[in-house]
Image (cartoon, rainbow, N blue to C red; front, side, top):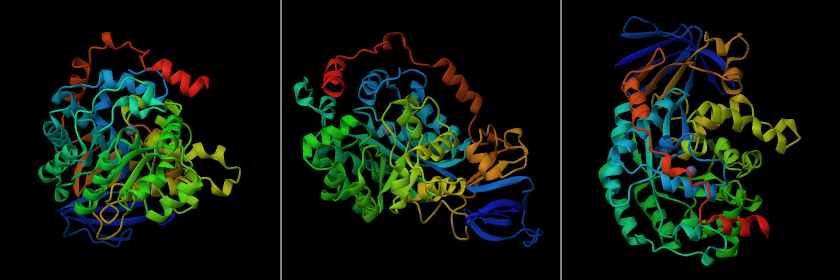
Length: 468
Ligand SMILES: [Zn+2]
């Protein structure tokens, strides 16, 4: 299958240029100046006039099950918010399947071609859950990394002074969880078809050293992405001091968990030494600005990290802490948020940098930097075509700036993933989105029992985090 996209505006380096692009099979074959690739032998020709073509963005961190908790959880800090999330997480495989489909569709229609699902898995039905998620992603045709959330420490351990709280027993040991991960890798990791398994220990706050280290060993053995939450909140920062006496980043580094295949969601509370460790090891910081503001977590030191040479990508985080899954929104906020942290405007992020972070940075963060994230011959064809005639991208000024800093709506015209066209004229070709909307409408969770804004853990949280 060959596709020729003619005379389309794209970003080459830091400048917009008009090019012809030839796709053969799943790859980009040729990128040439506009009007120089002859039409004749190519069966499918797309007129790129008034269009902008960019590499697909990567949603570097989300939790697809939370689609069902969109608009549900009150505004609370992470630790109290989590108590509400646990109480309302869907427990049916069908819900989780549609959560994956919905997340994938929202990603496609906001400029993404790949996502990292740091996935909730139903206890005792882990293989079935991952099967449901993978079926959802295959149905849509999106590229997806599924990193099941695994943990071996109880909820109360994730709090500073958590030892004062009643402790529940951990259902699974590190050995059991690592054996489970090996089974999931054997069954579902399928790079040739755009489905990947990642190692996804929830975060140091809920994981023993044995589990964190064991995940690192599996990541090395199978060359898989290692993905985990890191220092999202002040409470986690305090917990790290309490538990390790050193920075959580240094601790993870000592355990051998940080490397070029590692991506770390949030990193709001990292310090300058931690940033240096990231730069040295090649680990990726996944910035989730909407979620960080929604939960009052803080501002990740994104500008400092970039200046130190750290790879930074963007994520939406789950819909329960974002209330949407719009990648362009996360990118816009993540681009303009940091002006308040640095008065030197030379350091502020440009739209061109934001695209690089969302595409190439995102690809590196999910261990796919050699396959996707740039428009160049030999790369896999994960591409998004934007309609520059849409009113939200008018007037005709700098289309890239308007896409990143404006409020583009319904501007994704076409999407290709691995050379296969998934979206055309703004419509997803692979799944029936009307059926998806029907499911979301009719199978919404019964939320009557969920008005539990006050959790038993709250007095402890207030005492430790606010009153001391
Ligand atoms: Zn998360």
